[in-house]
Length: 196
Length: 196
DNA sequence: CTAACTTTTGTTAGTCAATAACACTACGGC
DNA sequence: GCCGTAGTGTTATTGACTAACAAAAGTTAG
Image (cartoon, rainbow over all chains, first blue to last red; front, top):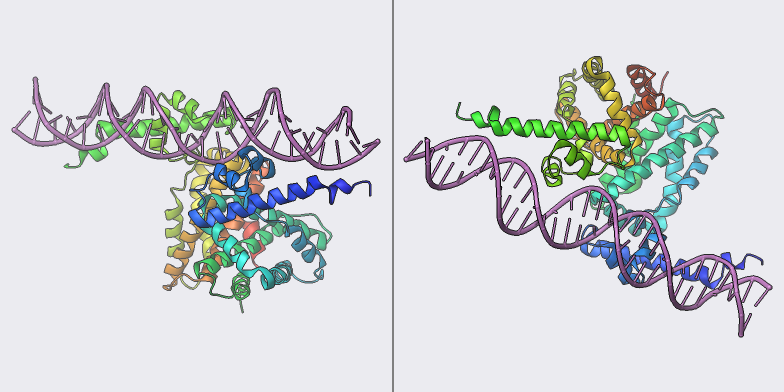
């Protein structure tokens, strides 16, 4: 119990509450009046903090929308795929498994956030950076799985897979969320296999 | 000769000269002292104009580095590929032809600019946006070539091709330009073909 | 050649994101 | 209860970018 402060201390509770408050007010305001039309000052005021505090919790205005917590999770799923499987199929299967877990429970929230990102230039730019990072992570996972170093080939395959995923997500938003995302992702990955 | 002003008038000459001056001083300063460490005010001063004039010529600080003029050219090369050829191979061949023309004459300039973009976060973000635009253009070109509308499959293939190109360019910079770019691009595209 | 016009530029003043310095408050260990 | 410190607010600064208006130059007509 020496480290109680890090788990249940009042400070940590407050921190977590403040962080969540900022995030929720930000998303509400973004969806309400648009991303660019919403200033950090507004968000901070709505959350009852100063704009400095906002930046203490999030490094940039964009970061408040980001949510890449489960990238490492997917990387682990990739590493768990059988070594014989071809890399692209391993990525497809891992992404599928990871997304299934999220979509079943949080579909609407995922859609709202994805829509916000896809339709906001500033968030897109940021998202592309995150996608590149994810690509690197996946390439590393592929390499680990085959017990060899990352090379150009694995990097290209990982980049192609994230490109397929991004294309499917964009199509999802373009269709106003009416399509089944899983099906779109299947189609996207199928396009990478020069079929018989 | 009714439209002389649009071709050889003093105004157009001055405009072209100013634009080039801004661009050259900007690149020099960026390479010299870094992108972030260089302010628009500095660039404007070096080019002998006010910072407002800078923004009249370039919408953003990043735009001064961009150079997507030959995207439509590559799209035309894609359209010119035989309709029987598979889409990915058509893109590879078109990109190859387009790059050959540039690399032979401007290799060093292309390398310097690519390095600047790859190593500067703000320029990367912008470049990803441009890459996405290029992807759309290529997808459209592929569709035109096959005389049918753009669909998810063509978009994925175009996105995968640009991802391969980007990966090759990144590897080129990581290797300090010592590798042969053409060879890197060949390897990158080969990775997209699940080989025999 | 001159007068009226249009285009381009500079000046000024501003907004907003992001960072820094420093003092203040209150939590939590003792 | 006391004190160190984490967390916050205040204020000020930098730098990208925009708007409004005035000034200067180019262009065209008469």
